[in-house]
Image (cartoon, rainbow, N blue to C red; front, side, top):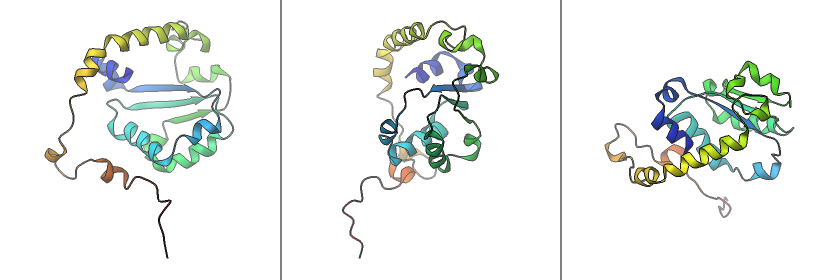
Length: 171
């Protein structure tokens, strides 16, 4: 929703792209167990194919020990160009981030100058709530795949067969 708001308000976002900073403090294997292959593939496809802005860089900060292994499993699903934009930092030294992300846009908790995280949370919460009618109106618009030139981009074509094969009998 925040990306939709930024796309709506700031043309530079679409042109220049975004840098994602994700602090992984507290991430456990039980969190990751909730990301099944279908959900993971959909997330990857969304960010590579459907997101209205390109991701210039994605930084995972304070990664747990198992995250490198998990990233190794996910990377084959990701295009090579997109793989080169992913950075995993297994350090708590926020200073390492400053060569990628300017201090002026990081929250105070990361040594930045953009104010405390709670102020940013409150700002975006109010902003998203102010767009409630816009989101309700926007939800009525969908793509008419019958008018698409070439192969329709529907879930079954894009992601293959979804579901469970637990009852599949093979002789």
